[in-house]
Image (cartoon, rainbow, N blue to C red):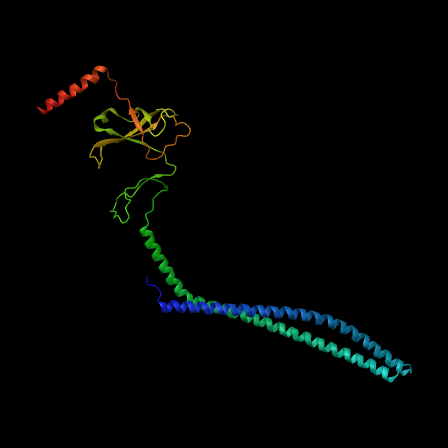
Length: 305
C-alpha cells in the first residue's frame, strides 16, 4: 500500500484545522445563545412580577376613579381631583400595557433563540455527516494499510504453540537463515511434569527395561541434604540415536522417582538440571570382574584371526 502524498497530507491538515475552527465557532455561538436565553428568562420573571403589581395598582386606581366621580357629583371633590385620579389610572394602565408588551417581546426572542439553537444543531449534524463522507474513503484506505502491516508483522513473528520456559535455543544469531522444518527452540510448557532423560550405551541396552529400579542422584544439590532417591525406569527407546556432535550412538531412556518419594523441602527441579541414573542390572562376583575383561579380549582376538 502506498502512502499519502505530501499535498494530500497538507490538504487533510488544513481540513482538520478548518473543522476545528468551525466547531469552536459553533460552541461559542451556542454559549452566547444559552446566556441570552438565561437573561431573557430572568427579565421575563421580573416583568411578570411587575405586571402583577401593576394590575393591583390599576384595580386600586379604577376604584379611586369610580369613587371620585361619585364624590365630585356630591360636590365633595373638585374636578381637578377627579382628573388627577383618572390620570393616575391612565398612567398605571399604560405601564401595564408596556410591561405586557415587553413580556411578549421576550417570549418572541426566546423562541428565536430556540430556533437558532435548533438550526445550529442541524448545521452541526449536517457538517458531521459531510465530513464523515469525506473521511470514510481515507479511513478505509488506512484500515487496509493497517491490515497489510499486521499481516507482514504476523509473518515476521514466530509464536510458540504453548507458553513455557525456553530449554534450548539453537538459533541465536541475528540474521541467521532458518530452513523449513528446522527447530528454533525447545520449550518446557508451563505446569508440565519434568521428565528425567538419560543416555544408555548401546552395549548395555540389553540389560535395561521399563520398570527396573534405579537410583537418582542430583549433582546440583548438596549431597548431605539431598541423598539419592529411589526411582524406576519408565521408558526405553526402541531404536538408537546418534549424537551429531560426537557421532556416538546411544539409547534414550526416561526415569521417574518411585511412588511416595519426593525431594527435600527447598529442592526444586528445573529443566536442564543434570541427573545421574544408576541402574542395578545383574549381580557379579569378584571373579567376574577379573575374568570378564579377559574373556572379552580373547573373543575379540579370535574374531580378528
